[in-house]
Image 1 (cartoon, rainbow, N blue to C red):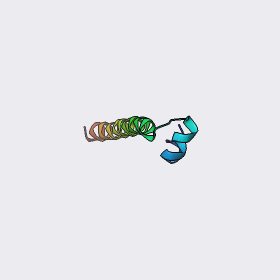
Image 2 (image 1 turned 90 degrees about the vertical axis):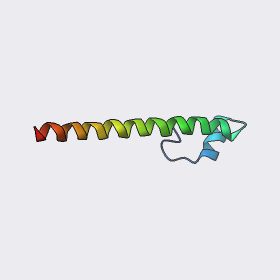
Image 3 (image 1 turned 90 degrees about the horizontal axis):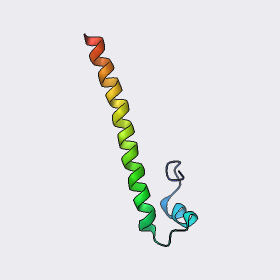
Image 4 (image 1 turned 135 degrees about the vertical axis):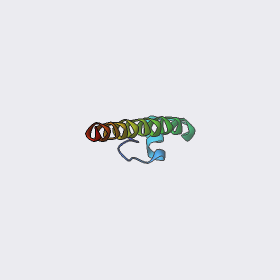
Length: 55
């Protein structure tokens, strides 16, 4: 959650007690993936609304 709020990865890593920053990077990659999925969902909603209006 800290990463989604804009906390830097180093601080987040230390706060979570990760000995290796690569562990935290795994979570950062998952968060980025989830953000992309959410954007694609929103984009899809607007695309489909535009198609309905055109009909």
